[in-house]
Length: 194
Image (cartoon, rainbow, N blue to C red):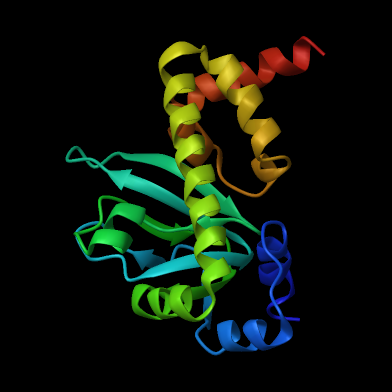
């Protein structure tokens, strides 16, 4: 079922009546994205918030020197957006693209704002979602500033179990703030220490 995982995610925090689910479904859109296809390019406004139904997205930042920094990976059952751009209508700071062939369910801000009025408990759900996202970013920043690459890699594997088998090492290294060569060294050490 196309919306099964989506509504399971929502049911973790709020319970919708059947009529409310139907009303929400009427505002949702579904899209299939090919590997490497962009959903958002930095500088453009982020018009949607995406739920990953299948596959994996990444949120990343491009630098003037041509390098990229992966900010977040969004596999199945995760949400993706440039929240500042989405909420305030500003140009996006981040880009979003697919690391695998993916399926997303998405909604735009106008429809979401209407649903907040029609189904007030959705406002609670998205408040919890945004709070959890903010906590995730704070934890990520703290880890980046205060822990070793080995600890960051171990925590990456805990947060994203099995994702290392699905995405390239260069993307994981970028997320960890290290080079792919150093990631190989860390992985080798981890295997030796088992």
